[in-house]
Each structure stands twice: as C-alpha cells, then as structure tokens.
Image (cartoon, rainbow over all chains, first blue to last red; front, side, top):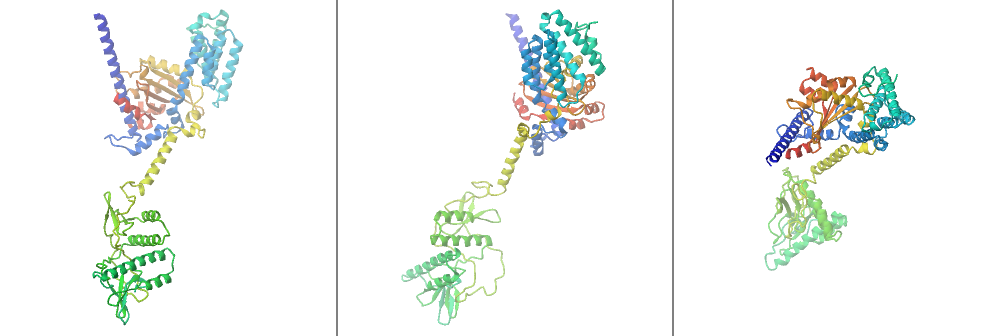
Length: 219
Length: 405
C-alpha cells in the first residue's frame, strides 16, 4: 500500500515537473519570438503592450508566409505545409519496408507520386522478395522521376537513397523470412550501389558499412 | 399690393407705391384683414414654389402677385416683395418695408449664411411643389433630408417639415434655433425700397405661422444614429474591409490554391527529400548529447540552386524539451544544425526550426541561412543583426492561448 502511494506521488511529481518544463520552454520560445518579431517589426504589440499597427500589418504578411528575403525563405517558412505528407508517406513506406508489405508503399506513392524514394523502397522490397527484375524496374522509375523533376539530375542522391532503402529492407523485422537467394541479391545490389556511390560522391561510408550490417560484398 | 419681385406689401397713397405694413388685424374687423395678409402670404409662397418648380413663368408670378394686393382699412396697399417675401406698404410714391398689422413684429433676420440660404430656397421650392401637388408629402420629406446643412461647428441643421423653422441637432434632439448669419458685408446700394413692380432682391426668410413639430424624420448626423458613415468613416471602413479581404486572400493562399501562383514550396523545393541527409543530421544531434525525442528532421534539396533546406520540428507534444543549461537554446539549435559536419557534407544552406506546443500547435517557425548562422557564431554578426536575418512565422493566437494554460 505504501509502495503504491509512493509510486503515485513520484509519478505526480514527475508530471508536475514535466508540465513546468513545458511551460518554461513555451515561455522561452515566446520571449524569443517577441524579441525576433520586434527586431523585424512584425510584432503586433510594442514592448509596453500598446498596439503596433505597422507590426500588425507585417505580422499579417508573415502569417501568410510572405517574408522579406525571397523565395527560399518563403519556401522554408511554408515547408511545414508540405512536410506533413512527407511524414505520413515515410511512415507508410517505413512500415512497408519493415514488413515487406508493398501495399503500404503503394499508399505512400499515392500520397506523394513524385517522390522517387518510395519507388526505391518498392524496389528494395521486391528484391528482398526475390524479384530482381521487378526491383530493377522500380529503380528505373525512380531514376526517371528524378530526371523529370526539373532538378539537375545527380546520381549520388538517388544511389544513396537506394542504399538506405536496401538497408531498411534488409534489417527489417521480416529479415528472418528472407531466402538465401534473396539475401545474396540484396548483398550484391548493396555492394554494387555502394561502389557506385563511392565513385559518384567519393564517399566510402556505405562500402565500409557492409560488414556492420552483415551484407558482405560477394567476391 | 404685393411687389412683383419682392413679394412685399406696398401701399399706394396717391403719389406712388411704398412698402408698408398692412393695417392691424388685432381689431375685430382686423381679424379678417390679418387673415387676408396670411392668405396673401400663403399664396405668395405657393406661387414662389411654383415659380421655382418652373410651373409658372416670372411674368405669371408677377401677374399673380399683383392680384394678391391687400388693401388695409386706411386704403393703403400692401404687397410682398417678389424675391424678399417681405411686406411693403405703398406710402406716397414709394414702397416702404413694413410689418402688416396683426402679422407680428418684423422678424426679418440678418442675411443667412449662403448654405442655409440655399437650403431655404430649396425648402420653399419644394414647399411650393408640395402645395401644387407636384410632389407627395413623402417625397417632400425625403427631399428635405437631402438638404441638411452642417455648420462650422459640425452641427446639423434642417428646416421643419411643416413649420419651415430651423432646427439644430443637439445631442439626440432637434432644437429650434436661428441659423448663423452670413458674414457681414456692406449693404448693396439701392437695397432699400422696392420699386413698384420689381422690388429688389433680398433673402427670403420665413417664420411660418404653422408651428409644426420638429422634422418628422431625424436625419443622419455625425456621431448620431449612423455614426460617421456619411463622412470619412465609410471610406475607412471600405478600406478596412478591402485590406481584410486582401489579407485573407494571402493568408489562405488563395492564388496558390486556385493555381494562379505556384507555391514557393513547389517552386523552390525538390519533390523528394533527402532522407539520408536527415538521418545524418539526426545522428549528429544525438551524438552531441541532445535527446532527439520529439524531434523530426527533414532535408529537402533546392530545385534550381545548389544547397538544401534542413527543417527540424521540435514537438513538445511528442516529448521534446530544451536541453537544460542553455540560456539561448533556440539559437543554440541553429548553431548546432548549421555548423555541424552533416550540414557541410550535405550542403545544407538554410536551417528552419519549428516549435510545437504540448497541444501540438505550431507556435513559431524560424529560418536562417547557414552563412548567417556561421557569421553570428564567429562574432561577425551581432544578435540584433542575426535576428533581422531570421525569417519566419509566429502564431500569436496560439501563444495567447498557451498563456492561459
């Protein structure tokens, strides 16, 4: 009985401490935001509490995501509106890789059809399931998406993303269900991609990791 | 008789017409005389109204006035000045301005301020039209509302619908009062006795015998029932509404939603985030001893330029807490993210940090270029200068709500 009471008291104290921490954090952030907004004249309130009309107008523009420093800053300020789909898509793709469930990855692709990473994930699952042709097709789709996206095509990021997805598929909970043939396919592809990445980015990080993740490169 | 132009009573004493008061009506026999003067006045204003309305010509008006001569008990003739509306009696060879008997004291006031004069002219014109059945009583009242006069003190004046008297809007009530006179000017030469047929022009002032109630319809007045809508406030309200609409259009990103403008995120950011770079950034932060619980890391390459945006969410609703011991933890985060190895290896050129409250509301979102972060770190930029380099959004409403919690 005493132990239960003690536990309740400890939990209550912990909760109170956490609540106090949150309030302190919020207060700090608000002070910081106030200071910043006054420097930028986008604070609707003056330091003495009076209304700052110019600041209120600028705050309206700021709320609309219109900054004074151009496209890049505007995009950074508005990025939150895009990232929630990234979060949701990544969660679906992560679950798909973890359980080797293509349907989950397909849901992610539906959510973000131009995101080539999900096709790399799909390819990794197909390879781990013993379908190297299907995997190759997906990676081609991923490469084409990257080329068509209007971004100057660079090989290194897409190879790195493929390596990441292969690693996730390999280290997933479904790893035990991987056949020996599929494991060989993954190891082969991983090593080949790691070498390509090293060539493209002069970065041997992934080659060095093969031992650590138990994907020894075939001789 | 009534002067053709002055409308004033004139009397012919044998050697000419002079303006004079008709004989008194206070006597028993004078009651009828007073009634005749009154009738002549009524007729005069009716005719005046018809003249103003163009229903009759000036010649017809003068002709009718001549018919409206009033002869008093002493055989003198009276008439109203054609334009002045004053009474003139014909004394000797001239018309002499006078008060008709039984018609009260001569209340001819000093000349009116032109604004009031104009309103009076309009009133009598309307009155004439009303009397002639050219307009209805409702139309008359409606037209009267349009002839409000604002004086130099911002008070509103109008003529009583029935009485023809001036009322000023004081507080919430209409109070009978005399309007301000016109600025004093030297009298025009010859502005005295009217000639027989065309008495000189003088302002018409009417203190109607009818003691009607104050105007039936209280007109709008500054600060009254309609506030300042009739003046500059309306423009201010319109400007305010337009500004609000414009603000809403931007706030809700209507041009982007309807496809007129491509959102900055679409123009600038790649459609595929760099997850590996984000992982590297997260690992680096964790290796620096920062608890990454409640933190989300995103790296998005820019489309048309080298570099990438690192976007980090600090979500206290998912267990994020600032590391204790820092006096400036948010700025420290900028330094940590912008100056680490992960930033240089992944070419991160801009850092954005979003903080979410325990309820999950986004409180603030700040972004800075990594070169500004570096400059601030090495002392090339002051704190104020660095703050000016920061862009972002603050959710003041959410801050306010958090304050209550």
